[in-house]
Length: 392
Image (cartoon, rainbow, N blue to C red):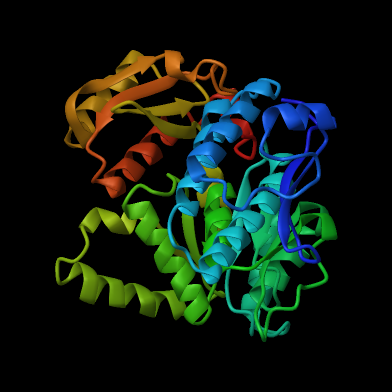
């Protein structure tokens, strides 16, 4: 890392030809790309196999990046895409997506050690509504605990959440729309992202967040809620707490819950344990505590080969692990839940000093996995390490 070289293949509209712009001196560019003089046109008859070879040749001459094999794979994928007869619109979609991701990676990188909460809700909620005040108070409380807040940067619930968290603790993930989507004044420019596409915006909401709070809203809010649930249920997101928050005495989510119970659960379309993936409340203290408690002992997780690795903030006793094996054996494909230190594939990771639980998870019963995480957090709730759930 640390290389300042900037390489770009650019289109010259005036001359209707491609050229390479780079920080490399002209002789080196000529060596790497013999088919192209420095800052002159690339031969349009160049075949993709030659282009691929030249790109790999370029990588060999760059300083060693820690993820150079993945960089080579990404460049090779672009070359393979170029071999297809793609239309102009296809390339515009690809470029727009990459530009969305480029900006988001850069902005979020410096805040990767602080946990964040994604707050969803209606852009049409007025400032005098009790839901607005609830979202403001919720975000203010979580920001005071050290969490940062992410919203869609619009008005209504989003504005309330950014206002409550304050500019220093707020992100805004805006999307270009013909209506409703002026950025609210409570997001600082340095943490305000403008996305072209909804799908890249959703990607970063879930990639960066450590918790989801959903307030009453319309189609967009329901879409965000069900996508979070779908990705949680299938193991593509999380584990992370998901809280449905209503105004005091409100019944928005209670009506929603009855639909889930009567139609989805009642007809066998979801499992009974799937309702453990979320919490419904109209109380501020319950909403905040559900998020804090989720990270008391549980830290994070990943798969290493076929094993599910759960990182903890404090080591459990042998007796506690035996209890987990007895209570949650149905989660195992084979073997048992065992304590371990960092696995070889994780060495160099920032979490390598944390104790771990490792087991062969069936990757199906996510609701039961959430029940297991809740029990682990109860087991180690008094440990000193559990006092800072906001730290990542």
